Image (tube, rainbow, N blue to C red):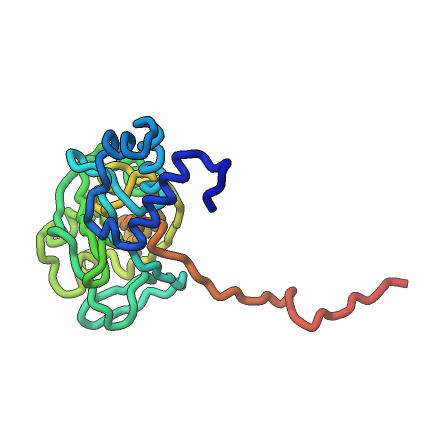
Length: 268
């Protein structure tokens, strides 16, 4: 709450936040430019900038080149049940634990694309290749229909696996997608492991997800390992803005946590 000892930049941020919430600055609207806004408020340029940057860190606005700070659409927070079961849909192929709900339509933002680009260190390490090795990446940005970008998904496929299943590099990979093509090529059944971590986005990720670089992201990395070679053949990295998802798990009691507690017999 704003009080007499609250820094001026925080007071200004609170005021602009209220104006965003009451619709004075609706979704997509640009906030007043920093210099005139600072003059109108009787503060320095840096104080006004600090107020806007605070709102950017909250995910309310985003800095857009040649436009200034633009109000973002308020995203809905989704609960992701962190199960460990991979299921299969006859029409889509493998389905991994995600934020989607049954029969909920999702849409792609922009156009999915594929390219052979230098592999980053973490991907190269999984594949056992040198960082920077030219590697196939399939990229798409998706969300529930009608919502702002929810997730950025990069699927990297090892050079050896592309040789085994050339169709994975085509725009249309056929029924079941690239995973079915990899398994058809002799790598099935593929097994998967997942690592989840929080980090800050790079500029490209922030731009594609329409968020600030000050907004933390949740990164899920799923590594698919070939049953034939026992080596990873695909790495899928899913990135979701932290303000759009929460993780949920049901905790189970081990035998040692049984209730009622069994009294411990004292030794004589």
